[in-house]
Image (cartoon, rainbow, N blue to C red; front, side, top):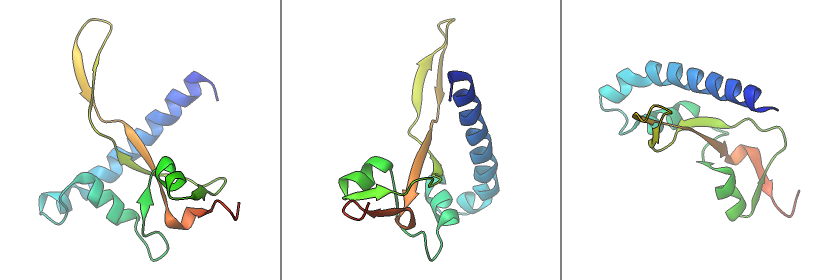
Length: 109
């Protein structure tokens, strides 16, 4: 995947995450969830997908993410950047999580 394709893929992921976030906004505003990411994780949770963590988190836990597993998307911590004109801006990057149903023990892989 080249840089242009990667940028396009990330933009598509951000767009879909924005749509999902907006659909959950009423529940967040009503106080059902403390944070946007809590609402996102609750929307992803099923009987099968109960624990979510990063790829690195699963590796530290002695697990391997199964090949072709699609990540669950949440918002990362805000990042401050400066554009080419010297203007500062803040954005929220997309973070990738995998569930307990998407991993196996390292010994089994």
